[in-house]
Image (tube, rainbow, N blue to C red; front, side, top):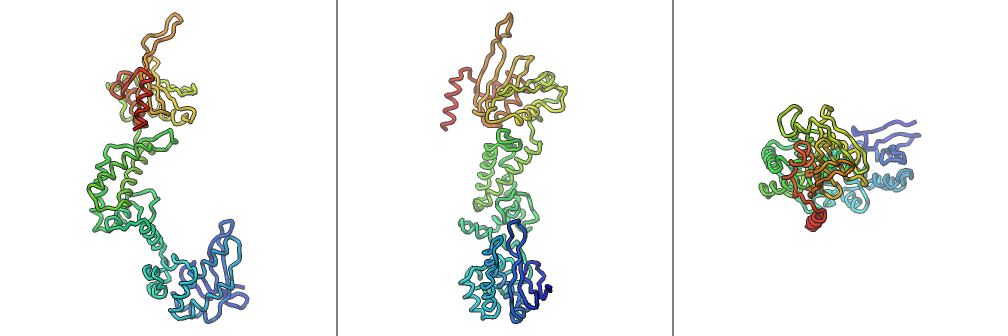
Length: 421
């Protein structure tokens, strides 16, 4: 039969139990092979119970010293009970100087003491006993996260000023730099919030009008790496110019915030190209195209027809078609207006495109004659722009949107020059 003799408010702090007539210390630590919690116990004496009950600092010190033994037991090994018992008198009953000397020799869990309020500076200097004067029975795990984050920055030579820390707290990246940034004004001290908002406002002005488009070549919800890099560069340049005192960590978290928001806008569909097309029934340049069927094809001969009275716009339907069909062996896609004999072909593997128009229709068994012109394309944004323009205005409307050339060899020379730079 097991009875709990003493426990503190924290559910994880080691408890004293009476089992088979003897006192034992029991604690949960680590996990077994099935990720379930492991429990360890070892015997103690009445004198140890008295200290554990009356002295929270020594209780926590014992916990910190025992945890490495639990870690050493792994997922299935036994606790080194002899080593655990050997820690009882030195931690619970010896003089403060002896406690400091002991903790200078053994392994111990620093995070556990930090979570319970121990003075971090004194811990770092080896004054463990003195550090425990501020310790309490209440755990604050956030304190551990802050210590780890600051230690990581210190290892990289980064020292945060008040505004740096406030910016990181605003984006939610003060503790964990890998988290997706957010806007958390309540996390910033009121006195610093106006200055933080000035930093954010500077970043917003720098990337106003810039978008990070979806890139179906990298997955259905992947965003354009080139667009991300352009936006980040614009934000970082502007913020560093306006706030030269900010460290790189603070500047990067602002650019990460703005880029993440732009990417989320694309993934949510709010950034679709369709807003650039004329509405059905309008008088704009895309009205005639919208009243005709468009044909989408890929490099494997699969077709999809877009109908003017369908539920989606032509550009949206085309990009959905491309997103579902794109693969490493399927990287050429065409939009064709069968009625006008015009088309736009995208070479996604090479960042180039071709515009095609029928010069002479075939008759009497003769093949039709086409005019084909080629142009390099500036990434996925360039492809999206060409698709948008072609849907609205066809072959002729593409003229100012590329350096069109009829010789494929000339295109290849231009591509080599671009790649070289």
